[in-house]
Image (tube, rainbow, N blue to C red; front, side):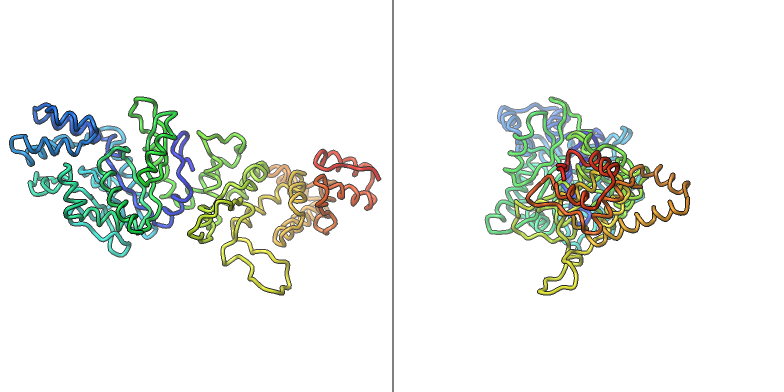
Length: 539
């Protein structure tokens, strides 16, 4: 779903895995850009300026092929003072500008997102800066920091903190810490090949978690080394969970970027930036909005319902997919956002049901959101809607040869509140037509809710409680059915209105009504209500 207009569309599978505490955010240089820190290319250029030297022909050739780690490796070999001299310049180049607006807001958002349901922090960064530590202090959040090569075992029971996979800049200019930074191609070779400690960490991480990369570009050396290590494991038959990346692209290049990312074994979640620009505000705003919603828990989802309940679903667009937000919120297993929707005043339009809730928008990957463990093999033909979906085992009926009841699953709280909202539309003929077109057999819970509501209206009318009736009409204008609609509901509840499977126009309705000897006035009113959905025939 989209958390902001024109933002990246976060897949439901990633949202669900995140809520279950299975996602690890893997953060790159892009998230520190708002604090004035450079990306890898700009960092290399700045180091050369600070060193007071220019590219040699060989270094320029390597640099222009985007091999920035190899460029620095060549520089360290020829520069006076070599390795430590270059790294001191690197430390100078990576001094954040904390006075800039929003300098650490994205870091704060990621620190909130990276907290598990049990409040454990599990996050990885290849950045050398200490902006996460600064953000933590600003938030009053404490956490343990692991710096290469001393890394934790990436399992829930063995890891609670932030991992600086390639090291962290020391506060006191410690030469040993500077020397440990994974910066050059030689460093990457030691970390991922010769010594292999980084490769072992990354491999175990991918085996145990769903990884989401943030702040990387497709040509970053970091990704190249990590993906090469993972490719070797996949060749040996190792299976890793889904990996995602929040990646940028220019307008019109979505397909090209998608193919390139998938070739690396990562599924991209793309957002567009203006051509030739560095405006990544869509990413940063999305992370902050996602973090705020996650921090607020169920209340954050209820806020989404409150914001969009009175909109018309037809107005949802690819750029502003608020329908996706509503569906994500209503799918919460507690049922509280669905309750908020059902109780909202005035009652949201029935268009939400007819245009969204009965539309088969969900697929195999969405099963887990409704408590149904999916099979490993994806079923590409599986489609279902919010109003008609597979039941989890605690609600599904038992497999049996004989039963006292009509087979049917019990409802979860989400379905119950959906039905409560629908009975606020008993005077909308579109609802009863939809029911008839879809078999006409009401679930016994739904039947009970409708009967109870009709009895309630009748009691209020007999008692002359006009103020109570007017209040109902104020909050739900389509709640109290007119006489013609009430007759239809009574016929439906009595099992006397059934569709004819041989005639999609359901002319049997008309025959049923005629045999019941309705008055001409009532019959004409029903004809006006239901036409042209029902084909009226003469006696």
